[in-house]
Image (cartoon, rainbow, N blue to C red):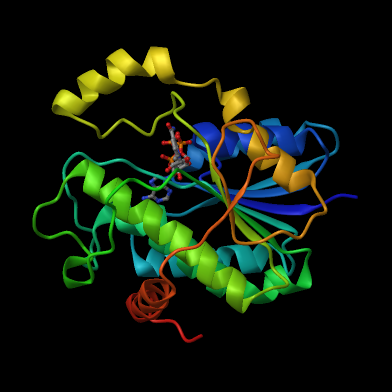
Length: 275
Ligand SMILES: NC(=O)c1ccc[n+]([C@@H]2O[C@H](COP(=O)([O-])OP(=O)(O)OC[C@H]3O[C@@H](n4cnc5c(N)ncnc54)[C@H](OP(=O)(O)O)[C@@H]3O)[C@@H](O)[C@H]2O)c1
């Protein structure tokens, strides 16, 4: 049966590959990116696949207002969501601050996922409502620094990746506890050559250039777990799929519940949400 599928980051490497695979199955796809021209072209291509319809929304999710606008635009296009795949992401060597004082990669990598899951609750409940977050593994020593959540001091790319991934996993853990009827899981995409490293500079850029061709997976491999989760009727929730292209391997997310709750409450405040 045709599913209504919402994909954030659908114009990027992984999100786009997922959108193509699911359009080939004849689903209705609503996807987001920032570039209107690129988005419209992708929508035309997806709409030619196996009876699929594809609609594009241009939205910047680096601000609270931008995330809310995206949620409103999705609601205008559909009253139900069967599958919600979240694949926005950015890597910044240098800290950048958005108009509302957030640090950019915190908003794009974590906060938009947290906020959209809240803002689209009704639509998720009305549809089959399964959430898949494209993320990565937890980094050793990663922590949520509540004293400096926006990393105004001592910013580093790796600290930022660590905090964002941990925040995503904590969100999935807490969300699955609260909303048992809406499965939420995090999938490791592994290292893939996409546009994600465009803002990586200096030594790290060189490391990416050298190690990329050796370590990177193909995009086909990177999306295997997402597609498998999209297709299954299983209702498992609160899991991380750590191995690229091995959907049978999953780990329950078990993190410090008090920290996850504190982050939840803090994120509600930042996003100006009630829940
Ligand atoms: N690539 C990897 O090696 C790797 C590894 C582990 C995890 N991941 C995760 O996989 C996900 C997808 O990454 P990718 O590799 O496919 O990256 P990508 O090719 O750079 O795509 C990122 C997507 O996010 C969107 N995006 C970025 N900044 C945005 C903003 N401010 N507002 C709205 N949309 C924004 C991009 O839109 P535009 O097209 O408009 O730029 C694009 O659709 C991310 O969550 C990432 O953390 C990737």
